[in-house]
Image (cartoon, rainbow, N blue to C red; front, top):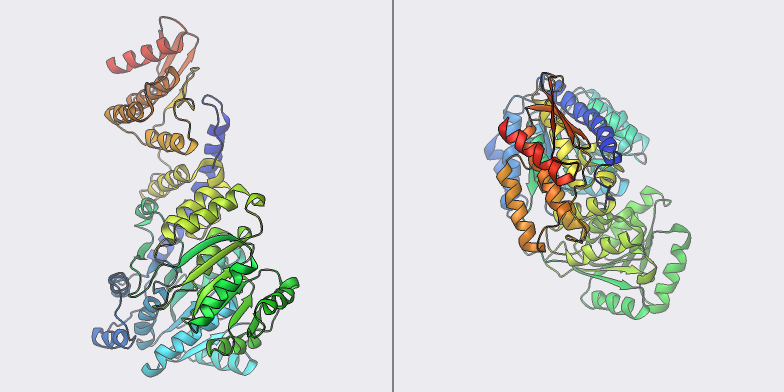
Length: 573
């Protein structure tokens, strides 16, 4: 949570101004990229609704209403004549890949190529298998390209692209170096997991193509409104049929608990994910698990194992030749193994909230009950932030909890990569709500070409003690929320409504809180009439928009007299 500054101090004002400059640069980049893309002539994608319906039917399950809506929105984008820039947001396992395949289908059938980028080799291979299985019956070629692709396979892919043959290529960042004149659609899965240089390269290759970005981290609705003229947004909030909440437990590591969790999964013929995020001691962990279950068939996977071996071993795990997958967090993104419905994460306090939520999303992807155990060594030895993350995950284990967790995560952690731009530290310093409000303002201003226009802003330099008193409103979170709401007030009656609410909830208002509410009313009354209002003792100076100055005198230099004099003058103005 951001620290509170005393009202009247300049540190918070300076921080806001510094952040405003950074946000203007971020917003400018977003708007300029959107403007450039709006000038691009989109490749003509032919949508045959009958063929599309056949493809949807072949999925073998009924789409959720959100999936149907997202597919419809994408097809409308293709027929608009403009290049698509759409973000598809949906919780883990809610069917984003199926929607992406609905976008790929008409693109390839129209004679063009589509690229699907994944952040890891393991996820890339998972996508490749899924796409190949779905597209083979429709005579759509699917290729895979990553750093472990053989020379012969790579040659075949490049030759296909050189000859402008319609196809889909699934790959990691290795695909970024490939040129394709026939490229019409780029799908990016979890863009925030790509590095800075890789993101810059992504911007280059997507300039003339339709873009579909997929993310399990949702964008808040208020920011989505500010982005609506720049980036389209589809959201999957409805869970697939027969899916159940994953039962989530935060526990101290204990052999009896491990025995119970593993034995339960084995009894129902299932498999287990066990996350041990330290390569050096992973063999020791395997040894310990075998002491608990001597016949347990354990597969070890981590980033230092050759990708080809990883693929082969994962296939064996999929075919139930192993009972337990002991791995580092490389299995975090998008692994879909319906028979694995228990996950155990060691030292979970060392993971971020989004990572833990994604790991949890790896189980319970069928009609079986999923179980998730976030283990810690000692509850009293972990940080407050880590405890907040784990408590939030344990209490928000319902289907679709991603949006709630994303908000909690931003408030707790302060980092993030909203919109594919770096924001680290900014939210932590200024608070999530105010950060979003400032970014919205910059985006709206740029979108309306108001950046260079002189803005009417009021500079209040009043030497008075005015703040929401912590003795009246003791909880920081509630006080920050009231500051946020008051900062958004545009009418005096809105301030009076909040004043009544504060009195109703917390009791009689003290002098400092009353004076802060008076300051907010002064700001509302003076906006668009005055440039600044300042005081020195009981002398008060008003500077009008035309730079004319007017001096008045309060009864005394007491804070309440100064504020009363200003309010009286403004009501007459």
